[in-house]
View 1: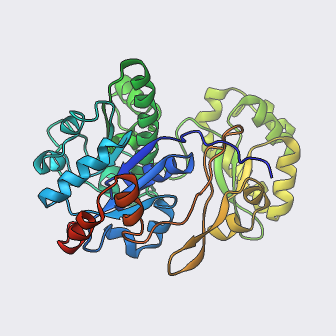
View 2: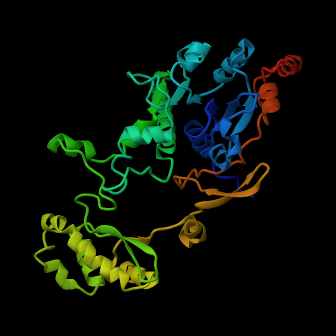
Amino acid sequence: MSDPLPSALSGIRVINAGQILAAPFCSSVLAEFGAEVIKVENPDGGDPNRSNLSFHQDNRGQKSVTLNLQTDKGRDLFRRLTDTADILVENFRPGTLEKLGVAPDSLRETNPGLVAVRVSGYGQTGPYKDKAGFDRVALGFSGITYVTGYPDRPPVRPGYFVADYGAGIFGAFGAMAALEARRHTGQGQDVDVALYEAVWRQSGAHVAGYGRSGNNRERSANYFPGVVPAEQFETADGHFLIINATTQRVFDRLCMAMGKPELSDDPRFNARDVLRENHAAIHEIVGEWVASLPLEECQARLDKAGVPATKVYSTADIVEDPHYAAREQVVEVEADGIGPMLQPGIVPRLTGTPGRIAHRAPRLGEHNDEVYLNTLGVPKDEYDALREEGVI
């Protein structure tokens, strides 16, 4: 049997003191590429998200220990844990670890190389740092909710937890950047991630447009101003198909696929700025063509012509799709008390040191013996006393 491929983050230990979504997700991303992640949870119930399906997905590959940070012995044990770690991930409200006496700067007194990923609603600084924040609040503050939906209706939130998961990704990237910096300086540092900033950083040129015109971008349904033709259209058999032909070459191919090559020379559409002005007209023409065909035929014609297009996928479509299957993007992972559970696969795909899901999300305190007795070397009598006192 050949040796398994190496893991990119083998030898890196992460202490995950976070809960709900962003911090656990950040930690699981690191675990999938080989880091040892120890999730620290309160003995009284643990992560509040444990009752939800997302817990099993966002904490896969981690170990769980219980630890009461409200006690002196618990904080001492937490310090002993972080002394062995490379990365600490947390998403308490700013100032919480400071009040507990285990702020990252104090932890670095005994572990100078510790990198602390600190996820919060508004960041560790600024006038709003003490405000509470969750994903939906962050979406509103980031500007994405304002521009999502139809102009004659209230704003609509995106369908995924974009702020939480975006912050998790930026947190994981920041941890890697800080570890690389540590190779040169020998010193750890904080990685300060605000939920709203994770979304705002993905906002494109919205602020540049505002800076030039002084005007807000308003809700415009599925039309993104200036990006044309790009819409979703209903097929003859009742599916929705997205077509994006926003360069001149692709627009020409779309016209050929529709059997209307003359549209490329139509004075309403034959210059990009004119085409943008007449976006409603070209979208109507494309929509009529799509409505005349069933999805399969329409998709085939567009694929043959090299026009980017896809059906608007439901979760059922994703689970059944051969491309998702080929890239292992729908996987089964055991969930404690549930059994096999469908989850997204690993992103990104590394060709030399690929990620893997080491094991299911842990039961509360499942790894207490392993971590406290073996990793930290806590004497058995001390361990039993800590458990008896409710510290762990």
